[in-house]
Image 1 (spheres, rainbow, N blue to C red):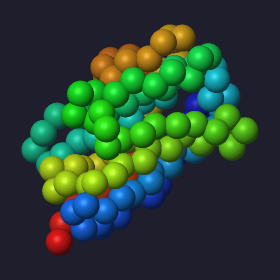
Image 2: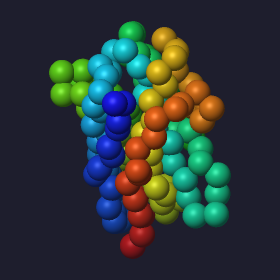
Image 3: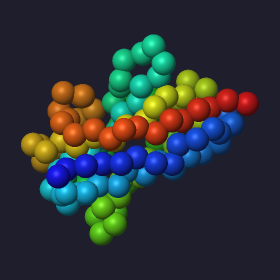
Image 4: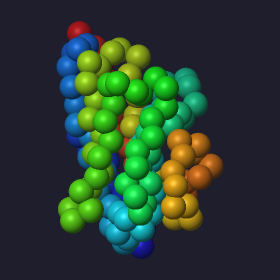
Length: 125
């Protein structure tokens, strides 16, 4: 059974950093592409970044370039999202998701089928 579980969220002050983890089970990380998404209160879920299955190439939404870094450890079945210089507007529930069809990746929600339960990130002083 394909499953992903996020962790690592929390309350952090502006300017701080967080490292989110997404642990996968039921598949190998080099078989399926993985995406990170976030949803702020009252807003639609938006794509943050993704990593392609075979080549492990990353792609970032424009707002995520420079402060967000996505990586994976295939042996540990773990994908991480490092977020630096956190801003209050980064406050959201962060989700990872699985695209079981594509060799490439996209931050479009419709590409993804399996979703985790999310982890809350709150940026506040």
